[in-house]
Structures are given as C-alpha cells and as structure tokens.
Image 1 (tube, rainbow, N blue to C red):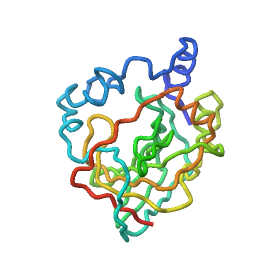
Image 2: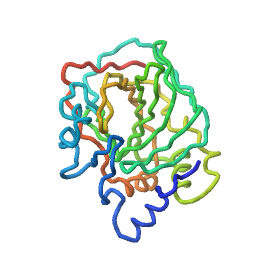
Image 3: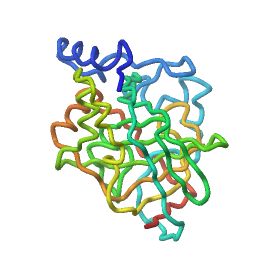
Image 4: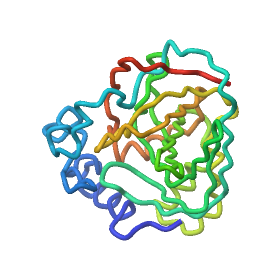
Length: 252
C-alpha cells in the first residue's frame, strides 16, 4: 500500500508540529477547480453557490446522506459482496482519508455488477441510523458498466480493534508491508441487513447517480483507531439531507 507523495504521512507530522489537525488547514480544490470545505464560507450550505458545477448540492432532490428510518421491508435479494485482498494507495484528498484500489472485486445486486474503486472515511458518520450518529463511517465506492455508482456504507462504533483499519493506520505511520494485511472484508459486518435508497455523492458535485447500500450492523474499531482518523479530519460529514419523496428499503 503506497502513500502518495505529499500526502498523509507528511500532513500528520505537520499537523502535530502546528498543534492542529489537517481539517484546520484551508479547504482543498475540487475536481472542477472550485474550492470547498466543511466549514464557513466554503461549507456544505454554500457548495451550490461556489460553482455552477455544484448546483445539485443546493437544488438536488435526492441528496445524501439521510436519516435511515421508517424503512419499508423488501425482498430484494442479497447484496453479494466479493472483495479481494489487495494492495492500495492511501491518499489525502484534501477532504478525507482514501484508499484507492484496483482489481479488488466488487458486488452484485439484482443482476447489476459494481466494481470497487476506492474506499474512504467520514468522521463522524454521515448517515444516521434511526437518528443515531456513529463516530465513523466507511464508504466503499463502486461503479457499474453504465457509469452509475454503488456505494456501500458501513458504520464503525467503538469496540475491538479492527485489523483492516490498523493496516491503513500502520501505513500512515510509515510501516511498509501493511498492504499484505489489508483484507477489506474485515471492514464488513457479519449480518447482511442493508438499507437501500437512491441518492447522491455526499461531496461536490453532489451528482444524483448513486445507489446506496448502508449496512445496518456496525463494525468495531478501537477508540484509538477512531481517534487517529478523527485527528486528521475531525468533521468531514455533510449534514443529513431531506428525504423528499424517496423511500428507504430494508432487506436481509
């Protein structure tokens, strides 16, 4: 697992010397050239005005994240996940900790195949579960052949240390060879119950092209592991968006 030059390991040291977190630094420039962040004049409430490319962040009708409640039971079949152990590239996007992967497998749902591209973390969690907010949420971003995205969300609560989280943290701390221990399936809960809904990216440009699959059962990470990620980005969560006329489905 490689760390992109000028990325997290260097930022960790700089933040420690400055006595602040990376989240205190100026927001990064997005893919469309417009600067956005999570606070103040470039925060979520202003995303739609920062660039016309981000208009859906304000005008969209199926934004993410949402509060997962009042779900309708549905027999939609399983979300068949087939991730493979991989080497990954840990990068700092300017907005969060992300691990890019290749040939890592994917998942199938209702005859649609989604291939895993990357996963990243939000502290605290972006989705709510029956009004409850977890301290951490992992998003596994997949793409279909037609360009639609499928994102699997996994909540993380304090508990037993997670070996896959530790592999990422070890790489951040400069321990080479952690990639051999990155079994992504360790970031999945055992229970298959999942909430499904049509949504969007939770960052600009807030494209409404995402099939969301949020696992009901959280996994655990140690308090130290969760705190280590929160030190980098203490609050990189978009506020909950209105459900409008959408339905949330729950299947086992």
